[in-house]
Image (tube, rainbow, N blue to C red; front, top):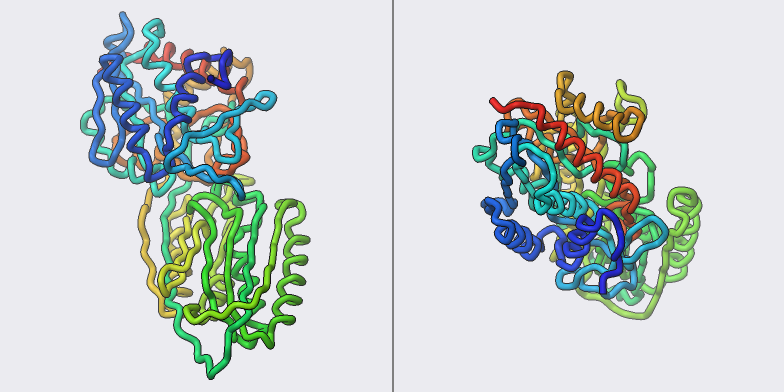
Amino acid sequence: MSVITGLNPERVFFYFEEIAKIPHGSGNTDGIRKYLLDFAKEKKLDCNSDSAGNVIIKKSASKGCEKCAPVILQGHMDMVAVKAPGITKDMQTEGLDLFIEGDFLGAKGTSLGGDDGIAVAYILAILEDDTLVHPPLEILITDSEEVGMDGASGFDPSGFKGKTLINIDSEEEGIFTVGCAGGAMVTCRIPLTDISVDNEKFDIKADITISGLTGGHSGEMINKYRANACKIAGRLLWAANEVTESRCLLGEIKGGTADNAIPTDCRMTIFTPSVYESKVRDRINYLASEIKEEYSVTDPDIRIHLELSKESDDKGRDSRKAALFLCSVPNGVIRMNDNIPGLVETSLNLGILKKDDDNLCAQFLVRSDTTSAKEDVINTLKSVTALLNGTVTVSGVYPGWKYRVDSPLRELMKDAFKEVYGREPRVEAIHAGLECGILASKIEGLDAVSIGPDIKDIHTFDERLSIPSTERVYSYLIKVLEKLTVLSGS
């Protein structure tokens, strides 16, 4: 039985719940793509899926609006699929368990996928409602937004006529996003070598678990200076090397789930000779208490647990390079924007860390609204990696979205906002990646604005969607579509 019966707009929440039943984490979107195509076919709408996995749907204008310029509605189908420690749900195969708490909708123990499931739900509700007044609609629901914006990058706009785009991938009601940072995914691989054991037995196993961190979106929340579990693991690994005179093997290390999410947990296993057992215990526990104090405000629930046991290892690798790398690479805010108070210009996030065969593999997302600054950070990562004889791969590079001085869409949406809300919206640029930058580079003269309802703690298992905000933004979006019918086609 539905847990969200009676919410308004009823059809928006109906489709949101339908989407939530379908696993749709990044890289696992076949099911939701089929659902979207089946929906469009059932409604007898023109639809197809392109080579990048995007879903494209078109709907004719409402009666009397046939000569209006087409409008593009755009969102993405994939979500960041994360779950709380101890949650056994298989997010590859199982849907979400929705619940209502006060004015918010959440998912039990997992991320909600409000980013960007609410865009998809809005769009489906609009497409099925034949009573609405609107211009011709061109729908673009992209794939793989959360892992490099590959869908937008692979999109061929030749079949689109629209030059006006409403992106529904923002998370704060009343804010129009009209510019964003560009980004790049940087993967560093550090070879881990054997250690000269000299007949020593590495017979003390230390399991270190870092958990309970606040996490969050690595663009929007990076200026909150929250703890990064993978960077903390590096500090602890460095400390272990110090007290063991580098007689420390790295067995396993794994942290983070997405390059655009601040890691909330990391697990690491190291081995050392028993003579160092008490030193490792004392040093790790002392540093753990210091780190907890450092982040007592931003990460009040941080936990660092050390478990020592008698167990030998013959497959671990020298951990010194891993410690050097993790303590040397930058992370977080690099520079604030000089022109816009409070806006981050350049940052990076160590989002995924793992031991892959005999290599340490670290995946970063570098963001900046300045190309040269972005390249400077990438070169820093390349330099640190080269010093440790590693390799670097740069992928998923996407452009920033420049503020457009002359924007008829922005002005129309501001007028509509004042009509609906009785106040002015806030217009801003953000330090996060939006597909608008990529799409603007593909569609000459594109006029775009990004909006959305209130969504809290995206990319975490505390993510929640405001129910009243969802209703207000939908009503506003309908008003905007109606006002857009005054724009005549060419």
